[in-house]
Image (tube, rainbow, N blue to C red; front, side, top):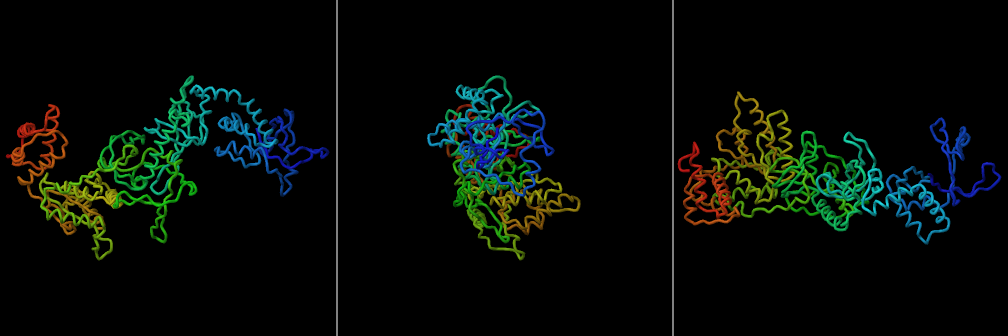
Length: 634
């Protein structure tokens, strides 16, 4: 079926009788497809062809350098522009529109056609043309339209007619796609054959953030073949207009989309729930994750081994230019669109999303789990603000002068007040603190408490994160670059493996130490090293340490302080006397052992449905004393 713009009045092929303007008669004419010419172009004939008819455009007309087709300003094709507005794949400004069965655009826009046909302000010619189009389509589509209306009325559909309810450009709702509910904009739908069977494939788009800009990511949703009829609301994805609580769903999704926009950039957050990881074949799998995370699509794209799907950037006219979102933490930068002008970074205003964009934002963001040390996809609903421990540093069992010294270095580094530099610019601008002493005296806790006090991420690195293969240097550089971007505190716990004195017989260890010496020379952040073998550290690294603190064995007073701190943070029913703590402080335990004993005692009291008290701690200590190799005084 072709709909044409009529030119001005012309004469018939014999030049004797004037013809009506092309396409202006309120009638229709059947044309038959004839054989194609040498250029594989079909000709259209008045009657069923018995032989090949001469096409209207032939070699004679091809001689002319310019062929003009005149048209009137008011045309049937222009009236279709209102009915088929924004329908993907159609441009109603063309002088000739062709449609093939099953005439999907008219099936999807049938209500709009009926509404346009019922208008009272149409001129006579337009009304006749629309009526003609309606009559033709009604004859062609009567079964499909009736079936569609029947299905919509009863809320069911068959697989063969499932295409009728999916109008390109509409909003699709899915509560089973990628593990959560969400809305997507439908681009197209088509029946496909796969190795798993026949399916109707929806190509949808959603708003995504790639670390630098917002855009559209495209993915597919499969509706697998089913027999008979099924409920529309039971499909894995269906038009949002069918949802019984459409307005409420829109409200929830728009609110979530605003959170998606707020998390564009780099953010330090808390997470508790299921996230998404990948198996060896690259398929998504649920992954339990809790603790502190970094939401950062840019670093995910640069450092994660996972494939990062490209997005189609939003056009400038689609969004709103406005001021940048204020960063929630001063020590993690909130990037806008960053451009480089003559080698200098220049920030521009970020494109702000509209509510229409918020509705179809992705339900997940990319980031890094500091506890699991993995790149994951985090669900927006599970991302929370961090509740920082305000007394973390004060609870350390350290002399006050040591606390003040550590804090002065940490805060100076965080505020970029460190103006000292090496002879070579950029060298030795970081701050390295070495904490040495026996296990369980608070070395690791010191670094954790400093990070908590600064409200900065803590990145704990071990030899297992790097290995000893040839990629160790690039891995280390990547980690340090990530840490610098996040303004994180770096902790090398039990650093002996990295910085042990070099020898003539262990070349691999020597290589690792040399790499650390070279790379950390240019590290500009805050670094804590902990060790219980301070004498084994390479002499070249000793000179790079800014401050070294030795932690002695715990005293009775410091052990009592640790007991009090742990008991205060347990959050269970307790029953203690002051004398109980005095007695327990005399037992020669380190901080880690005190924590483990209390944890076991709390579990025991919980099982007995009783208050945590001295008797349960004594029970655990009695069991521990029977272990082989336990030191005297335990």
